[in-house]
Amino acid sequence: MSTAPPVSATAEDTAAPTANPRRRLALVAVALSALVIGFDMTIMNVALPTLAADLHAGTGQQQWIVDAYTVVFAAAMLPAGLLGDRFGRRLTLTVGLALFGLASVIGMLADSPGTLVAARAAMGLAGALVMPMALAVIPGLFPAAEQRRATAVLAAALAAGAPLGPLIGGLLLQHFWWGSVFAVNVPLTAVGILACLLLLPETRNPAAPRIDPLATLLAAGGLSALTYGIIEGADRGWGDPLVLATLIGSVLALTALVLRSRRQDDPMLDLGLLADPTFRWSAVAATLISLVLFGAFFVLPLYFQSVLGTDALGSGLRLMPMMLGLLVAARLTDRLVDRIGARTVITAGLAMLGAALLFGSRTGASDGYGRTVIWLVVLGFGMGLSLITAQATALVTLPPARAGVGSGLLQTLRQVGGAIGIAAFGSLLAGAYRGALDTGGLAADAAHRAGGSVVAADALARTTGQPALSTSAHAAYVHGMGLVLLVAGVLAVLSALLVAARMPAAGAPAAAADRR
Image (cartoon, rainbow, N blue to C red; front, side, top):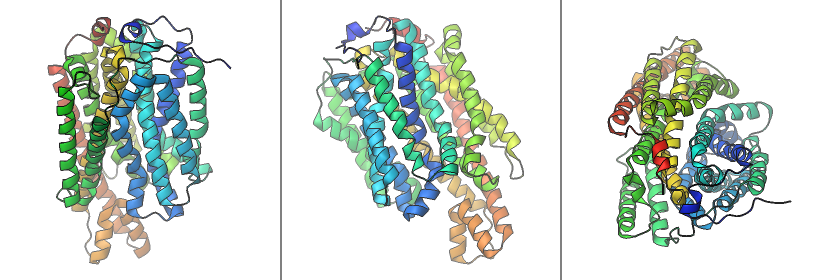
């Protein structure tokens, strides 16, 4: 079995690679790898109730089954990008896929919550190795004229993962046991590994910075503490001593990392990348889009399952109109950018996100799925235009020698934006739901349980024979959902105005042509 020949690439020789005859097959393989990482971020949303019951996981353990992936993923992204630049992007991508497959096997066979949390943490580490490298291998595969389109394909795969997760999870849970949501990763990662070895050339930057143990510790500690603090703040309250200590610690660690990076000639956190206004505002746009989108992703599954009464598979299927809009947008973004520029495309996409979310915020408790399907199509289209274009524009602006650490920085910002979105919208939803819920006639303990979630209120209504409680809970949840979508929609509109005002009019094609 032959493998693709290794190429030790510097900034100069990756700037204009010869056309790799197998580059399109390689792109499919890398996109598949990115898709696996993408849908694994949301697949647990539908699998958690089943596996929690089988493993007897408490509320805190359930939270960490989900959050261990996110915390480790965010913490390891920056060092992972540097590792790929220095030691080889194909090697790092392959190792990440292998670790992801191994961790999935452990998760599939887990017989305790602790083992599953550890497996999810390992999957987060693997995802941090895969995600930036999937994007960073593009300059070594495609000549400059084709890099935007190839990057857009990968960005579309990453964006498609979030709505696909609930659908895949629902399909598997309908026919198999909860471990199947991990088992599905094993053959997919095996195919990805084989394709990487056969199709990808090895690229690296021999001049990349050496691993800085202190900077790595500051980055990992600061980002993990920030993500942990945001997640816990939504649950414990922002005045909780642990939350405050964690957030203050994260600010101190990240401040120390920035100061250390500014004193070094070739740092791990290359703040010089943000000096390019196209990269900077594309990254800001991608981060804001991730924050806004988590408003919709956070509220819709429970709306479908608790208010509309669907199962896990039905919930996933009802997200598919968003996929339709996303796929249509993915086919148009490249031509639109060539015609009207990246800034206009990103602004239009954000404006469509805002319009869709504002329309969705008018949903009433008696409205069915018909209203939702309309704004989900528009949401997917706006998501495709804005997120795919923002990521592609940022990445084709990077110097090829810094592709790994630059894509790691971009994905770190997106991950932190998503974490902030989850925490902020979760707190907003919980407060609005509790404020609108009618718990009159319930004992204090029962009222507290009903105020915890619409799922708990439904369960209590069934056991106590009080259908009025369920009706009130559904109306309260729709009220909270409307408020979340309203705030997310306003943020999307403000983000569109910000990008229109601040992002350079010149698109990334010009920047890509001028890269060193």
